[in-house]
Image 1 (tube, rainbow, N blue to C red):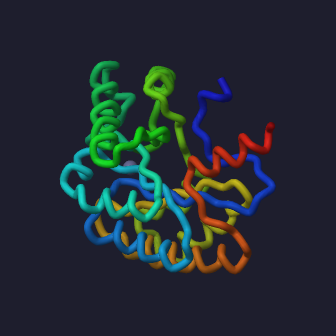
Image 2 (cartoon, protein in one colour):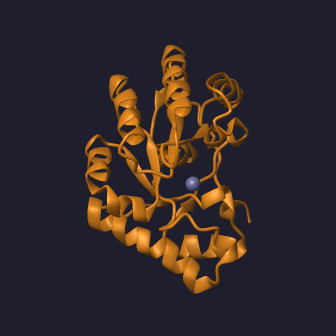
Length: 210
Ligand SMILES: [Zn+2]
């Protein structure tokens, strides 16, 4: 079931990396992430929670206007394997509709909260037109605020062409994440990496196969 697993990286000869930000939109930290990416003309992917999107539609708009991608991260950040099929469907579909309503675009990338999923979730996500997106640097634990240096060091070891990296711009104090991402972005740019959205990364990898 290779294609049904979460995608954590892609094969590509291009020096591209996809940074992703979960749990927003957030009135403080999402905007800080946007500033960092604007400085280097990079693009990011934001896996947003539906009920936060409803609360901060103007931030959703800013993210889209600046050319970033929005991914589905459920409506209430539920642990999907605890839900029955119809509740699970509701969590994903409700946010799918919110994204379409606010952005005029269909989202095609999904990340399950807590990276928690089972076969049923996989099938449902696929049926709704999504790819399941994981990340390589889950050991960086940025959501636990382990220290800026810790986040940077753990993340560094996962950086290569085609990497997908996980960070958080929502829930709680994200200042360590912002500081770490700021430093990582400047390192990546110095090394000649381009920061792209997850969909761009997937597209690059698929073009390579042709
Ligand atoms: Zn999350």
